[in-house]
Length: 320
Length: 320
Image (cartoon, rainbow over all chains, first blue to last red; front, side):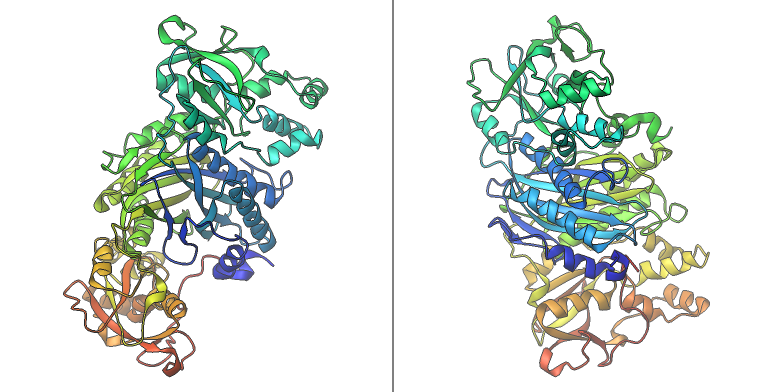
């Protein structure tokens, strides 16, 4: 059955039925003019990300459930990167009339399954017909009394650390775009990010000075921190371990795996800066350091081993 | 200059520059992983609506600024219809690469100008390239201690009242779709809704029992209240004054103006039910009454003068 056959209200009721039990913070879920979510902190963190068919995903590369996981993760990671705990998602689905209703249902399954990892629930949304399958998600979150971790707090002398996978999604993307389907661990990483959401609030409590989620690429995203904080950042290339599957894929495809690690996006790892005396433990990999702007002369915000990175575009521009 | 020439970050900086001063409730605006908005009530109301080019607007019928006003209004009205005050908007813009950057800037102008009417601010968003120009907006709002006005509270004996324009946008749509451009008051009503936002929280304080914004059509939207509340609703056709411009346009086009009034959407008027003893004042027009389900035998949720309405489709289905 297509979404056109089901109609707008048929689609909404079928999708809503897949969303699972609401968290206790959801005071009013789907079905009214607006949802109501408790905000115990008396502040709400909100972020929006949109995924467009053929641009952020391909239906022959990713299942509907994968796309749901990715659409949710892209937004939930933004909330975590503020040091907050996600509470709710709102989803606008624009679907071609001939889209199978099962695709929309499985998308909802993926959205709900990813949200529940963080304690969040899909609380509302909208649907429309469109020639272009498009999923716009808004995530809400609660700071639980913590100050938010913004991009502008990095200070010279801080260490730069990452938590979560880096370069895996970009490797998976390259593999799929060359017509291959393995190594599965990398292709699956492109299909579904594995985001250490809980480490966002943990980093805030540990005293992190700035944080961002790696959506455009590590160099590009740390560049946002460098600019916002008025500092330079230098990464150490050999701080990154290239996993065996990634090394093998890079060799087979004739590419430099550090391109994936340093410039590849879509893993939604967390990248943060910490004062040098913070005990980071096993969840964080120290990959570089923050330098004062006046001793940082590379002019690009972020260098690798003291030099401007020459391995390709530093990140993804959604219009180029 | 096109959005592709400006690039993603050029587009974001140009659009962000148009958003105006943030309200005191905006603790962190655009430019980080998430925005932060104060929620003094410790609950946030959230709603998402999406507008698709060729489906909800046409660029030859509406200016970019008009589309911004409409996109904001559709969402802000949902917040008002919950009895809440809008505080913030998040906007996802999917744009064809050849879209003029001025169009995106003027869209931002319209969004900001409509938001400021309610005290809300655009606090964040996302952009992507897409073959289909699409604007997904999420609105947030604060209940200021009021209980939310949901759809399920209407009780037999309540009166049904509306605030704001009814049928104007539908008339304007019909006029434009027949190739005409006047009467201007109706065409402009389609281009930019005129929503009595402040009456949402006022209705809550006055003791309204349910409320909805009229986006799909009065019969369809009151039908949602009837179903959610387990009641019937009967409207009185002659409660509605047909404005002179609407009567003239209907005569010229050979249509029944009550079709616009009863079944036309997109005005985002507020429709509410009130206990019969509430003094409604001049802002509200009493148009009908709530009946117990067991004396309401029409089987359709909403009748007009005791009969099922036969004047056309009762509302808009975005997939049909």
